[in-house]
Amino acid sequence: DNDQITALKTQRDIVEEGVKMRHCIGSYLGRVVNGDYAVYRMVEPERLTVGLIIKKDGLLMLDDIRGRRNSAPSLQSEQLIEKWFVAHQSKT
Image (cartoon, rainbow, N blue to C red; front, side, top):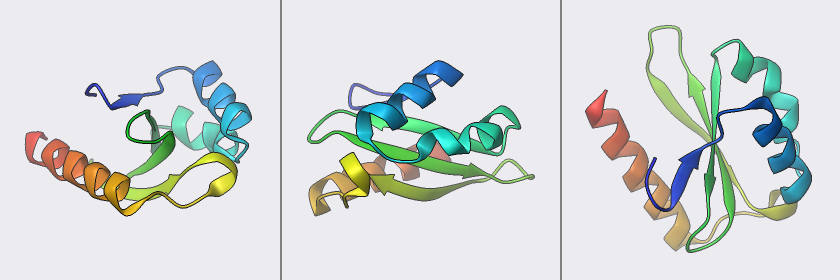
């Protein structure tokens, strides 16, 4: 987590994210509960939902970045998320 990107840690948070953002992240709940997926929220410079696949060997893969109603992120936001992801990978 950082000031811009935070993990959604409860089932309720994930469901509410889907409702607020009007996309299907709530349907990933089973994968989150099974430990196969993680969901993050980005608030700045724009509001986005970030999905990560958790592989069996513990490696993470950046899966999806979506805004409200599945809109695509701006290039600036995508670059920030990729930088955050790479930094996180180097810590694991």
